[in-house]
Length: 205
Image (cartoon, rainbow, N blue to C red; front, side, top):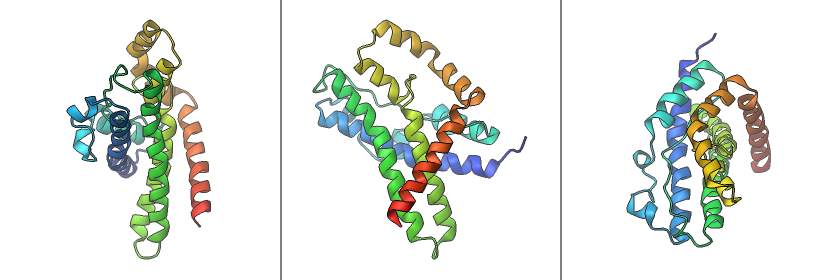
């Protein structure tokens, strides 16, 4: 087994960079929809340390990248109160989708930076290009309907019984580990990240 420590460290660094705008998007949309919970908890900020979950933003992404089976990582979830959100559970769906949407927006920004620096700063350009791939991967990953990921909130918006969601939450972490390490889910998300990156670079060029 080939252990790529450099790539694992780059992925963790990129995850820290990408986590802040992702979680900020959740917090900002929730605030716009009337929920002051993220504001009171200091989450309406782009400061990375406000959004770090040490297990999900450092330890797991490092080792899953190192082992090459896929990439597993997340930031500290932004807490919201659906009873305060305009639209209730529909508002919760909008808050949940804001994070992956920000990942797509960050992929476009990083692609523009990669193109603009390819000659002057080739090392940075390659770093930004890797960020495009990871940002799109995270968008897909976070849409998986498994707690604690954003896609799981869409289950609540679809009105699945809360007891079912609670049971799923108990095993969500294990389900993610098994899915990433022992199924084709990781390679599938990587493939579609590459396709998405090619489309973005093709559009910008």
